[in-house]
Image 1: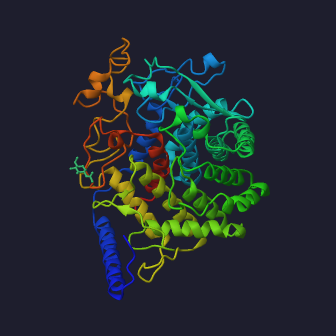
Image 2 (image 1 turned 60 degrees about the vertical axis):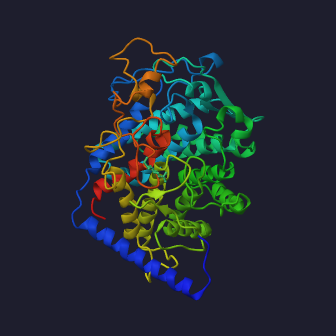
Image 3 (image 1 turned 90 degrees about the vertical axis):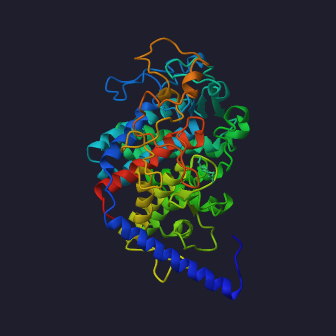
Length: 508
Ligand SMILES: *[C@@H]1O[C@H](CO)[C@@H](O)[C@H](O)[C@H]1NC(C)=O
């Protein structure tokens, strides 16, 4: 919307703001006055269980998602490397390293900040991190090389096959000195560093291994600079093409290495490169491609704890970002995020729930940092008071509650949670008969009949959160609407931390 400079325009804008504040207050009152409480503990357990459904490789004896079997058992073999394990990113059977690393970073951050609230699910969450880090240790085992993808995404997407049957080319793609990938390597370093904190006291030896590897991978990412979508364009685009440049992943990697090591070199790296890398750009984005808002929130903790004042500029950016999410507020003319009529945060570009969970995670993490520091955020145009930690917690909780069922469709967007949830998710393994009930091979095109069927999926991918409703809160529950009906690991990863917090703090 263009800014209005006329007097009446300003008055109108002020009235709109007051109305929005009143609307928000009423929303909160409705929530307090007795909407059905959600079972955050149940949702937490399911959100973690989902990751078992995405597992690749040899499944362990304690696998609880029983309809899955071993898959991708020869990944890497033709190239003389063991690349078995890891997670499929979504409803297909490719192992995409870039979103997998981001998923791992976010799962780790959730355990670090909110593990305390997980109760008996803490160990399950730690195991979900480890399934990924065991794989990342394989993809980074050769110095100055990162294996970034297993599977030909075009061929894989041309089939509708169970992972256990998969017979498309398991091509291995890598970045190295001559074909750099600072984005995927930087994110891998971030993931390894973040996970090293998760394992610091649980498994010190493993933690040291992760951290050592993070340092090496970051050095490679920084020394040989470039975007992996230039080096490997034909393989990784348009799937997880790095649209946003690799600079944010270098800052993100350095930020996590700083958190894990407390070493001055990383702090200096951040300060030296913040401007060079355009860290003031797109500060209200956070996802597998863009890390800026995450960098600012993560580093703000240091500032708010009064430890490292030189990082103040990151906090200013984080404050700007936070204000951009509050209806009716803003700072420094940063554009406000949109909400659907039913109250769901909405960004264009498909698979909207990834934005909902990742941005809500940052809001909640920031609210905790502010609480501990007894600080608030001052936003322009936001009545006369500042945005308090409790307002931010309510904002994040509203998004989580929308996912769990407080929405115009009156359904949960998490499979297996509540009485109404998505039944026809865009997910090969979930939609095809399991290998237990149908042991015979189903080939590439053999699955089409299941894809096209209007029947519900036979296998519940419990805990999977799908891409979600469109901007008018409508949800078709159809496999062919993949932007709405496909789950991804990076939708769930930030949600785990959110659910852990609301499980232990159901009233905010
Ligand atoms: C959302 O989906 C509904 C039902 O499928 C459709 O009628 C509506 O036009 C869609 N809205 C937008 C903005 O795409």
